[in-house]
Image 1 (spheres, rainbow, N blue to C red):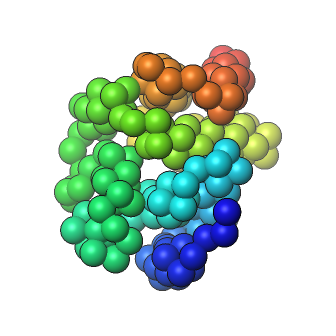
Image 2: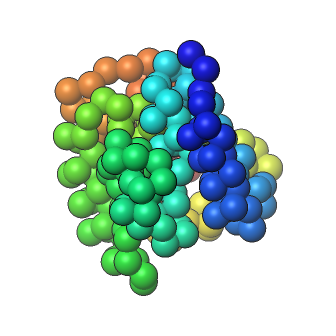
Image 3: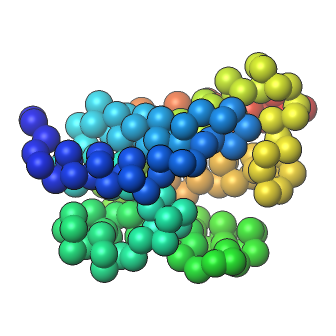
Length: 186
């Protein structure tokens, strides 16, 4: 399946919105994360809308783009998926734990199309944490808003929420990555 002009537009839009961001800790360009998530979704046969939503999954939360703006440019399906993957639309963001708990409660009942993007996102994040742990050691946990036990709780809770009514090989990989991170944190 070939991607069309909307995909090309999404690549440009994603780059325009995130080009000055870097990944916490590693300093890698943030767009590399978005490209990795989109690639994972595409490799697991996600639709063009899913791949576009993967490219744009942080644009509401990090760049202040509105759901209506996304819908006008990329269609209601993409906008709905990005909205489902967003844990905060206001600044300052609400307190961490209640915000994450609300996100998890929604995530468990999201359609499989959204869950594929979410697992791709969290799996890439978890792999990045493990890779950075090799370089930084335990200092890797200092990049997060909360301590390591809370961060690890969140990643396991995401996997559990995704597992509600859904199975996928990437979900198995996420559980494996979380177990590795938990062992590294001990």
